[in-house]
Image (cartoon, rainbow, N blue to C red; front, side, top):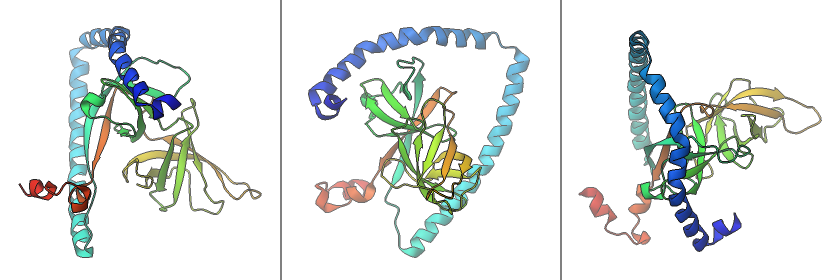
Length: 268
């Protein structure tokens, strides 16, 4: 791990190995892919029609919420203009799929079918429809390893939506839970509180769901509470995730950054 972090030669060798191992991942995951294809082929027409109706209903609900979010975004932009503030960060996403091969049953990592050939870099945030999944830790040419938020080495700066309490979460291992650290015993936190990314630390953009508080233990002899949370992301199911790419337009417009023509290209 130390050699991979500090040696370009080792990273190049790892990239070559990931290319060689791509057919192995494809072959290992092919039984599951074939089974799902066969299972879907035998579904009845009635089941498909029922699913279509449910999806249409969900689409209407999500579309309604999207209109509301657009209105809030427009209002937020108006307030920024009134305050003289300019948003300096924009995001775009890229879809990816899980490679269904568990290389190490004791690690909190997954493989996705995106790599450096797709612009993936180390530290890139990964989310799904529920919330934050984790971040890319070992990008390969065509596949990348993503360390989940349930890994004990993964810390995520978060903020409680209800009380605006700022804290940090760490994974608790294979049991699928997370620990919320440094919560004062008199802090305003409740079971069920939604924790979202605070934007601090520079890895995860602000506002993405991370976890829901599930258990709180107060001890009068300790300065901090023991708080547990359940990840908001669907870590144990689903095959599709999204990579979040962050752009910094203000840095591109900075003449001192060596890209003086960036402003002209934006106007074009």
